Length: 590
Image 1 (cartoon, rainbow, N blue to C red):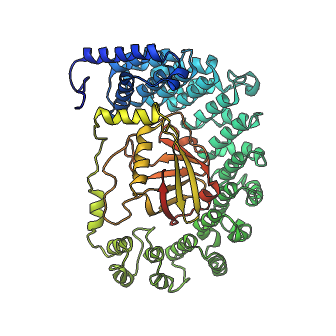
Image 2: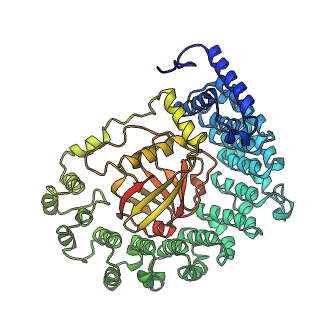
Image 3: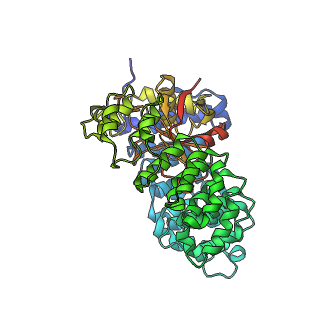
């Protein structure tokens, strides 16, 4: 028989408080320290308290009584989770309590409180966060700096003052000059969220002694493509840190360098096109293409680049580089037979009405590989002209994805697409029984399965993932369940943006099956979007499902907006080789 649920949905608040108080007493009796929590089996009531916290976050319920009891618990791990939950569930009535927790003696609790105030965007916390940046331990100060950035213009004054606005020597005299590199870097990154980016405040930090700080300053300039920062970022074009050079390469686009710095930018790009890092070369190709024919001779050799995504990037910008030079187009076509490249070249040639590559679509339509037949229809350029005869030929294709696209091209009603979009998918997470949350707690919070492994087998090799069950149990549970039930099989990496993300998990795959009949909320944590992170792809707040992504490189602008629920531990080279359209064989979770 199931235990009756109590609390906001099932009766007396007094009963809820009594239960949580009893759970706290049990925790004090058996687990007065974090170390003992891991060594002694938790009581059923402690499990129940954890489960109610997880339920509160999942259902976004403002259960202040539960929060108050758990924040008074002696278990520091539980208090830290509760502090984070206040921000995740947007419990405004307890934001003042989070400000108090910025001074907690446990660094994890204080850091979670600082991060929670950021995801909650509690503007009344700006002053408290400013004090934390100045005097709190490094881990807390770093999260406080990040949260000030999330406040946007409300945090501008504190951010600029902290970075030494108006000072002749901010790296020596500013309030954060003596803080740890992680704190200085976080404060520099906070400026990316401000309107009218303060380049005069950011660029001095390009001379910082720490690569972390230089990386942050270069990222801000590159992310905003701020003309005012281009001259300064050129000075670190040969920096030893690869991510600094990535940002420099990105910042040197013609739109940012303009005419006055164009010649110097092109000179630096010529060097960056030969960088040892393929990720630097990807960004350099993107920027070099903005100069059109001026760098055509420097870009042409990259058709032989060993990195597949460098060549894909080159194909994406080739129309601007080759213009109407038929010889350059033909040499590019002959140099690379990869479908991902040729599809892009063909699209651009057709868009520009260039008399090139005759009969290619007809030849692709006869290929045994469905991806070629789909590409023959120009599937990545909806609305583009298409040979209706070709579409009529493929409307009865053996592959459902090809049939669907051919039908769309002919203006036919797509019942498959309707089934996918109208499937039984809930707009919000469905309430679960408390027992379901208790199982998650036992597995990920109180058990030995906090970091399970997953293996993504692709046509390029295997990627090994470590999943963050303790940080995002709801997302990890869904991911592992889909893998174990065979849903992650025979899909394609439908979105690959070179030096940004690799995305998979479209398990509908155009075959009429609905998306997973559940919706996942964001599980924001202090995990950052670093190279190799595994994230939950969404189409807006709390719209997660089966799709996931891997980051090629650090992407700070995604932090706090998407859920990081794992990381690559092996197979980085495989991840880097993947291009759009590559096959994902299956995801295995032992």
